[in-house]
Length: 188
Image 1 (cartoon, rainbow, N blue to C red):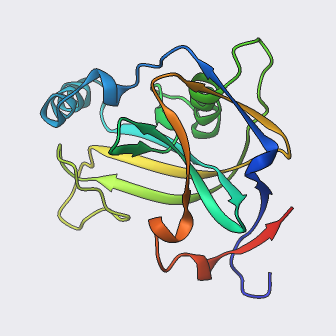
Image 2: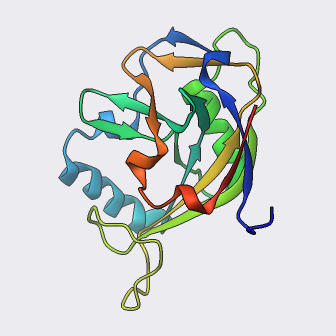
């Protein structure tokens, strides 16, 4: 593009199909308290080191606005599809595995996830909620590294959403109010 910002193809949400599947148990539903989640992270850090997580950013077009698909659990918890990588697992292959586990079809047909560029890096310096888009200067051993990847959607896609989740399309401007000027969207 002339601006130098990334160009992404964005498809209409009406072209997507959603079916319900069996409930999914993710880390956020296993560890009900924040303290328990960070205690588990601390125990794993002593065994395997820094946690590596990946999340997929799926952008669609609905009502002429770009939106990000999020999984909603309950009324106040939203997350991007993704999760923890296994030790030594490749980031792109791990994200494909996680996307298939979370949103993949249950009928044996494999979804062809097209993982595009890494669009964000977040670092957790301590066993606490704050994350930063950089490693703070005082941090010598980050506790978690989270990478966000753009996932290109096919013109038609079937999402198998777990019954305990709801797939919602959040307007991009509600997530980051100054982000839209950084990208050139190509609407299909």
